[in-house]
Image (cartoon, rainbow, N blue to C red; front, side, top):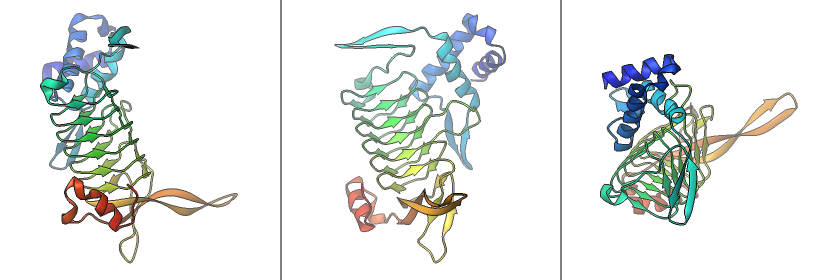
Amino acid sequence: MDALQSIIEKAWENRALLQEETTTKAIRDVIDLLDSGVLRVAEPTENGWQVNEWVKKAVVMYFPIQKMETIEVGIFEFHDKIPLKRGYAEKGIRVVPHAVARHGAYISKGVILMPSYVNIGSYVDEGTMVDTWATVGSCAQIGKDVHLSGGVGIGGVLEPLQAAPVIIEDGAFIGSRCIVVEGVRVEREAVLGANVCLTASTKIIDVTGSQPVEYKGFVPSRSVVIPGSYTKKFESGEYQVPCALIIGKRKPSTDLKTSLNDALREYNVAV
């Protein structure tokens, strides 16, 4: 890995090196390692998450060294620089037409891809469901036993290099049409009700106590979250601005996926 990283870092500083076979091989080796799950753009540590910037650099430089090609899949035709992921049966992944995943995205065994899209550099761990028309953006990290409901948009990030990708930790439930972007981290077993929109600047307000507690950029573990709004003053007047409200904690009795709908209904939250 050290040798690969050294080649990638040198090419990042001197793009003329992209013409050399040693460099292009190293970049493609990194993409293959991402595809197999050996490398990750971001990985959990004892103190949180670590972003591997040099891996993101390899992903960025993969595009200029690749040529546009026609990709034919049955009666369908694509024209792109990056090949599609292959070998789903051997990997133990269920893929429903018209799910599409790019080479360089890791998808673990037991994952179910409904008609959806998974971009390069992302990591989708074991037992996760990517539901209909959900998208997993470049470099996003999705944990084990996560449910991304219909129409969920998980944002991607390549640059700036130091920026953390969106991270959805193990056991989280992301409700229909939710948007999670700009490196937001949803911690273990949290539940987002339908239409929650989270950006780096979105206020996430815990309203379960006598005083509100405000977060930005992450949802605490096991939180149950719904869309909300607060009043903000502008020169032209006062207007309602979107936020997210933490209205409770997921109970031990709702750990099973089959109980999630009941958990949400306990708090009158739409799925």
